[in-house]
Length: 315
Image 1 (tube, rainbow, N blue to C red):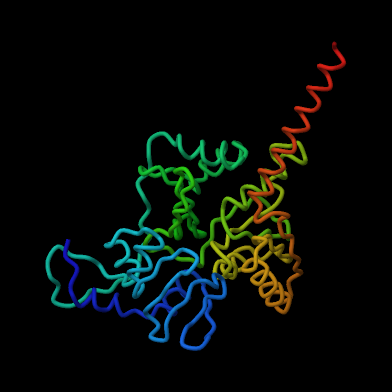
Image 2 (tube, helix red, strand yellow; image 1 turned 60 degrees about the horizontal axis):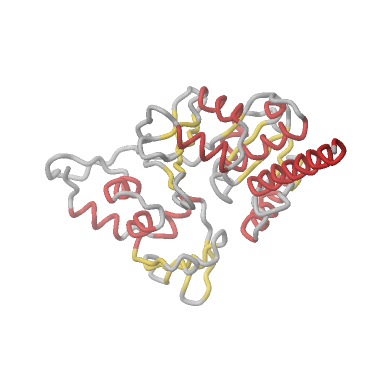
């Protein structure tokens, strides 16, 4: 597969701030000779808008290509495609052929063993939710053992997908090449006027699982609609609201950290001005998966105490 030098040059000189704003919804503020990311304050981009360093991770580089290969662990050719949207040909092209990016979904594995182990055992997600999302094709395991979360448009066409690593302590997360971030992973089952908003699909699934546990009803989670924003940007929200006009109230359930709190406050104000009822329902811990795991531990402790009490009475 051939990638022309003109394409590589274009990719290497793509403005970092413009690219990350469009791809991830990141916003930046000028601070001396650097730009600081508001969602991830330790991410700094130099005045040339190409050189960058992510201080909390100890990783730096120059340009979008370094960012995608180092931060998102994206293969070189996929990174080029994600940045340029250029069709790669088998011979040197006379002229770069630019086309509209199409979503590239990872190949599906046969048995989703890692998916179930990671989501159900390690993350505590209820199997009913996992099975339902798999039947809806919104969730599957790829051949590398990653979990793939998929968002569809109103015609049933996949428009956005992200992958999540399942290895021990893996922090690997990436959007699939050609993803349109205006479409978000969602769990939509009803026409109630409330919409719950999260930073990630796992947080949405965790909150839904807590609803099952608290209400003691496996179908309880289907009484609310949930949308993952894939971060702290609202890029995916306008499209959802356009396609679901019955939504009148927005419940922001973003992470309980500085980035999440700032984003919740900003978006609450923005959509209140648009006429929506808004409220913030932040998790008690860092995020809703943390809350879910704490709830499960609490229930296990209570059951252990109850068993001990019964054993004592039988003696």
